[in-house]
Amino acid sequence: MTSVATAGDTFSVFGTTATLLVSEPAAVQVARAVADAELAAVDLACSRFRADSELSRLNAAGGRAVAVTGLFAEILGVALRAARLTGGNVDPTCGAALADIGYDRDFALIRAAGTSAAQQAAEPRRVPGWRSVHLDHARHQVRLGRGAKLDLGATAKAWAADRCAAMIATQTGSGVLVSLGGDIAVAGPPPDAGWRIRVTDDHAASQDAPGQTVTIGSGGLATSSTTVRTWAVGGRRMHHIIDPATGEPARSCWRSVSVAAGSCVDANTASTAAIIRSTAALPWLRDAGLPARLVRGDGSVEVTAGWPGHWPPAGRI
Amino acid sequence: MRRDDVRFAMAARDDGMRKISRFTWRAGAVGVVCSALIAAAFGHSVAADHGQGNGGQQGQGTIIVPAEPPAPAQGAGQVTSGAS
Image (tube, chains in turn red, blue):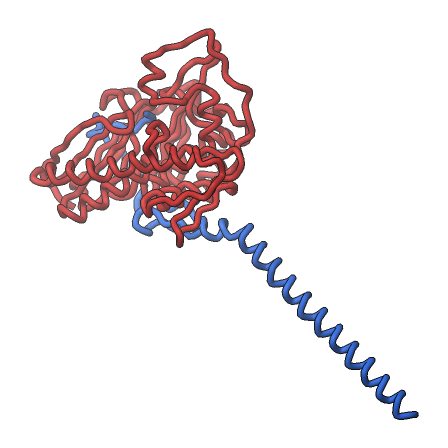
């Protein structure tokens, strides 16, 4: 551990806010340069809203095998692993379902366009499922099954946070925290008291917003919520966490779930799956031994597996 | 038994052996083709199972728990974890 004061940087990426903290202030410029390069590469590989991305080319390939870069194959492998570990809750083939409910462009554009009462969501369609994705790691080839369109948003951002944190720590020797839209990865020697994180619904909220402050020294912490990335179609409220079983936004008893895990992508995988699993999430997280904080729609809080007791003690935020 | 009968019986036996041999080879070839088709159909699952993440640090069979659970702290955070 180190007691050196931290320095940081904040910038926009992936349509959200990134925050970079380093325990060695002299490392901040190198850290930013590493993060910029890595995040640009991930965006070019995985953006659903860029026509020149590998993901867009694959989605448009009509089921033909497509050659991909090693980076894309790795990120897709992470998404398929998340699907397998969650019994298909976190499924990368929800791209078409998301487009059907109106999430077909950068979210900033949706937010700017506001609500249109004339818009109607398409009838929910069956999500093809992660087993319809054929990834050949050896040949760096991917083929999608009939009707499958990928969206890697659930895992790619968290994986990118892990990747940036690991690379920055290796290159600078500094402790580092990388937050991409509230998906947080840390690496290297942390500050003496650990990295202080305010856990709340919205990553853009102030650092003393209603919620809870915790510290972590390694791994990752992620929060999934149905209350932030929302929009309305035909008078109906939508959010971006699709339940693959229905092809529609998940109907969950939780408004937000935060999970700490050995990596940010594992934390994000678990928090997203917990939203979709709804009432079944509590025993699932407990069985997995994952520290988590789950907030119901009425604000009442549950914690699991060593997550510190909620505050205030009344159990509501 | 006459010599012609013996010759006929040997020829019939050889013919039968050839048929059995041909059938065995064809059955083997069909088996190989079926095995290849099954491998092609289900090979992606195996490939997917070998997906690497985070420099290969992630366990393939389980979500990895943190080395330490989060610790309680007072006051504001350095960053915020929430949905984006």
